[in-house]
Each structure stands twice: as C-alpha cells, then as structure tokens.
Image (cartoon, rainbow, N blue to C red):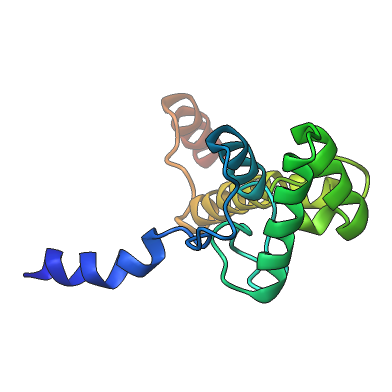
Length: 150
C-alpha cells in the first residue's frame, strides 16, 4: 500500500515537463538532442531543476529557444554556448572551472580537510587529557635511582 502511495505521489515528477506535443520537435533525433541539451541547463527560477524538468515560464521559453536552434541545424555546443553567452555560468548545471568558480569547486575539499584536521586535533587533545602515559621500565629504574639519591 505504501509503495502505491509513493508511486502516485512521485508520478507527476516523473513525467517530462515537455509534455505538449506542440513543444516537441517532429524529428525524434532532434528532439532527443534538444532534451539532452535541456538537461544540462538550469532553470533560473527553480534553480535545482533542469529546464527539461521545470514548468516555469522561463524554462519553457528556454526549451523553445533550444528547440528552435536545434531545428535550425546548430550543433549542441553552439546551442549551449548561445544560452551560456546570454545567461552566464549560472544557467549551466555543471559550471566550468575558472577563477570565478574555483572557490565553488574547492569548497568540498577545504571542508573535508578542515574536518579531518579538527578530528586529529580533538583526538590529540583528548589523549593529553587522559593523564600522563605510564612509565617505561627504564624510566622507573631512573626514578628509583633518583629517589634513592635524595
């Protein structure tokens, strides 16, 4: 029963946003290319969805623009570059690596490194708090000798 409930709950999100036949290209190969390009472009209203998955008006306009350019015979790269030139890095779901996006790409590494360093420091501090280490036999012998001398 739960599986059916979740399947019905997720069913609307599983359908493609481009559900209207009037929005689709008549050539299946071109439509497939347009969908692939659309999956790489971010809906700037929804921000966490591609334009293919979004129902926002801006996403619909971008889907139309992509399909117009694909139908005109432009390559996938040319279509992506055109959209990128108009809307900037933010429209790309996988932004390029450059000096502006470098902090974004480096942040996970910095966070993991900082976390590892914090764990090491906490363990060292905990080891110091647990008391002095037990004396070795050589240290015990030296201590006994010092106690005998005093």
